[in-house]
Amino acid sequence: MRLIRRLRALFGREKLSADLEEELRFHLAMREQLNAEEGMPRADAREDAVRRFGNITRTKEAMREIDLFTFPERIGQDIRLALRGFRRNPAFTVTAIATLALGIGATTAVFSAVDRILFRALPYAQADRIVSVGLVQSLEREEFMTGGFYFDWLDHQRPFAAMASQGTMVHPCDLVENNPVRLGCIPIQAGFLPMLDISPVLGHNFLPFEDQPGGPRVALISYSLWSVNAHRKTYFFGLLPTAW
Amino acid sequence: MTKQKNDTLQGTLALLVLKTLAQGPMHGWGITLHIQQISDQVLRVEEGSLYPALHRMEQEGWITAEWGLSGNKRRARYYRLTTAGRKQLAAEEQNWKELTKAVARVLNFAGGRA
Image 1 (cartoon, rainbow over the protein chains, first blue to last red):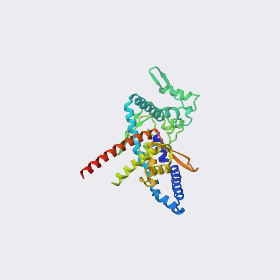
Image 2 (image 1 turned 30 degrees about the vertical axis):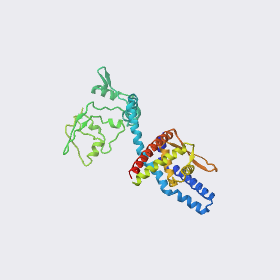
Image 3 (image 1 turned 45 degrees about the horizontal axis):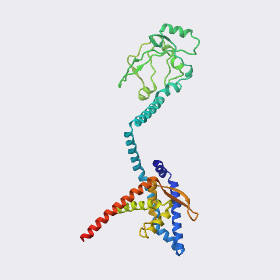
């Protein structure tokens, strides 16, 4: 309640000043009237009222100062009072803190993880039509595929507009040169990025002849790797995985 | 030194205002007149200094203000004592009595020696 009153005084400055203006005018008018009733000439009555009142500007400034200076000091007092209250009533304190912690925690979780996973669309074209297919069995819940089956599927499947695969493992493939960087390479089929409607910013996607046993060992690099190494014209990889 | 004097004066003014409002709601002008008349014109502060004092007391929660009509049909801001204000008045009256008693004792003692 006191806090509200103080906030109002601090931020409702214009209202205060209009109220004050009217209040001070009233005071001066009343003094002037009293003077006149006591037989003072009109001009003198007014002058006397102003003289008795003193410095009007200073009065207004003083009132503004009260709002400015009492405010932080009172806030401090309120905080200390609240802390003492917490200490006196630990059950309430624990409940309040737990409530806040849960609330903040849940909100943070939703916005940092659940939001991405559940609510936002995948950053691919026609995300609602993308599925992952493969074999599952009791020991390996994540679907997988072996080469022979896969190529049978690829050649004969009809339900999907496109089908492509990536290797299951991330291979170390280091960027050699002056500043070596350890990178992770994932083998993918030439059709993988076109299926997701992703095309490279620079250069080109894997060409059909590159996607064959014994083909050239080529790699696409991510935008972030490219942007931190933008000065490099060519990249030399060590240990680039052999075609699978 | 001047500051000290000012503070004492402020405190005294607050006491007088609280005491005046204990009789009922009153506007600033009315408080001024009341204090001057009762004190036989001895306590004559700059009339303007009453308003910052009222504002400070309002912030403390001792008094509340609302607009009303004065005797001659003009809009005036009426101040009213709150419960906290009544408590403050009692405490300040007690303080004042103790202070004046102590000062009187010192003065009498010094007077006896002179």
